[in-house]
Image 1 (tube, rainbow, N blue to C red):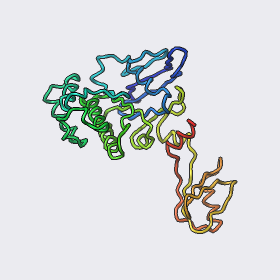
Image 2: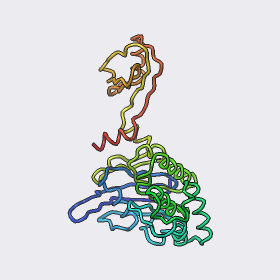
Image 3: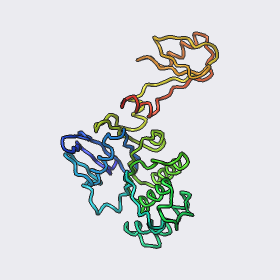
Image 4: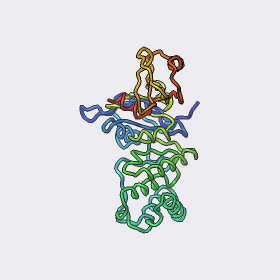
Length: 297
């Protein structure tokens, strides 16, 4: 049975008369990557803040390793908040070493780790620059380094790739994958569905503070998505609305949406019976982005 690192049960949060999270329950298991999804204002960041005891829940239970989060856990948990905060008048290396020492590392250990990290993320030449002279993307790399400097068992990241260009977004995703492979448990908030597809094991999608999707990534696709058939062919694609709806993507390449209770094999047999020459016939699931638009629209 998986070991729970985070266990949230019947959690609600109100600000005055405004309930921003309503009766939310989910769990995060040891060693997995868990994505928390939703539009702006859906309650994602509020949920994380209540989990980390920054805010008090209105009702419900939010546990980390079986107990309410407390300061003694801070060395085991790395948190990258939505609002980034760095000492901008200090040098990059001094800032990183300072936070490393706060997290229980000695100065030389923190310095070596920081220099290695800055090299890995491509900004080693900025080590002696003041933080305020860095671009926002470079500052974000420094902030992430501070978050993971002591190799925490649990990482909680609020929009970790926000503002990064595609190259640096990929770099960060690779870094998180490396941490996952080393056994870290990772929770991240994101709007980038391709990041979820690449990295996450399971997900929770919320809308107006309520759960709308929860489960394994592939499970969610199968449960909430409609299978599509991509077919490449020569000739004219026959229409048959009893079996499928068709949408031609480009010449001789189309997407077919099977009607309810119609199997892909039945469609294939029909197309062959119409003497259509099929070059490629592939059953696919919709992307998470398509599902997100469908269920949150």
